[in-house]
Length: 278
Image (tube, rainbow, N blue to C red; front, side):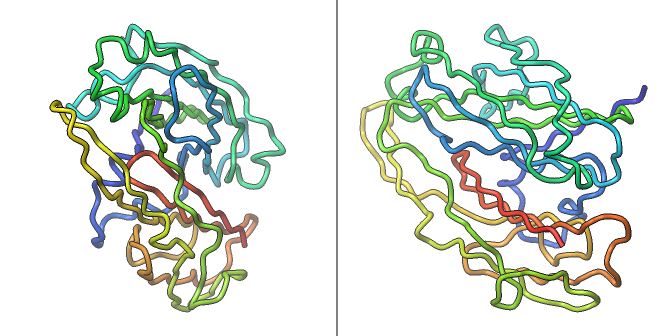
């Protein structure tokens, strides 16, 4: 059975520019939209809840997920984001069938959450300098989603484990708008401007420490990525206070709902998802 393996990750999203690119944000086949957690940066030894958002609008059978975790061996240095071959790999579960009520409507939306446990400091900080521990070590959560057609897609979430305080928090977004009004209907054959209530208040200052123990204050970057099942957007990403032109489909989809996702992300692993169904 032929497997389609795709990697979708935060680093890829954050490295893209606001250009007219291929329809990366068009949902149709099996996709993992985001892996979210209330705690994107934590201390060693704590539990972290992960909630996936997925889409497979043509799927009628079961969706299954596999979760494994490991200490990052160096994504920032070009190491592939995978736990395979990693001595710290831990398999949480394999081919877990996702609950039908959660994904009943076109298998699109919030999937089953799961709880991972961050290793204690003796493991997660093994061989790491005081500066590395302060700045943060990545703990990888590898999420593999499979549908009944045998298609498979893989994504990962990095949980930052550090000794510093305060920790990173997720961007704050609660709604998105069409021409300034909360979006409640799907525009048909018309253009509108999509915006969100994400503001500069979500941009956090954070500290980093160099090898001389000098502390630098940095500003994180925050943006919104748009995912749609119908119509098209001019861009797949917008910055704070910027709009994104959306053209509605010629007609409403038949036999299923239409979906628009706004995913607010920062460049330190924080993410918040707003989903609307029409």
